[in-house]
Image (cartoon, rainbow, N blue to C red; front, side, top):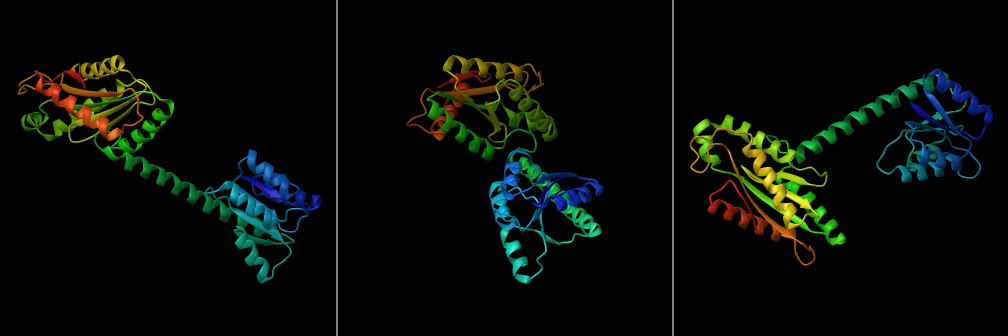
Length: 303
């Protein structure tokens, strides 16, 4: 671990740095609270040993400023002090400290404190990773591994505001697998699940820009958000998606419109987002989708 030692005494700074090194860690030193704040700003550390009695900013004041700077990112801070009265302990905890070491510092106790804080830090990191994984899982549709409807709408609304500020166009594509219920009835739901996975993958791979969004809108219905895309480009992207699904050649022998699995796509383009909203564009795209179905399916219609 990288451990920041804030100590104004050169002798104690050298001695304590050696103790940290002997414990198998890297010591980064600062001779004042002001110097510590500059280091924190430019170099992340895993733990801080903070002298309390220093000229200028003392250890408590420096700790308050460090906590304010780090925000939600927690780094253990252990005070080094000769004071062991109740008031000093209370002030240190209130300032944002996590523990105390009383001078003169015992090498054994310092090593034990480092190990204890290291375990806590490790548990924190594991918990953060788990929370990140849970957050990701809450955003992704479990079957198709693309955004679920709720997350898609949230992200699309953010992008909509960006496009409004830039006065750029937005396209929504609504798409539906043709005769999917009949496919499930013919081949079974497990086959239907596999087909949904293949179709969602084909749609995703047809989108070439990082800002394009795709989500599962319903059972066999998908939705795509295209930023800064005009009508011609929207038709081009939609047709690329339709062809990608058709090229999967998933047999659909009972389909009355096409011998393999196909996709009907409806789109709507808003050249200016000012005065409109995302929900209105989704409704227009949905109407275009029904038009594509009425005209024979396996095609693109733009409203």
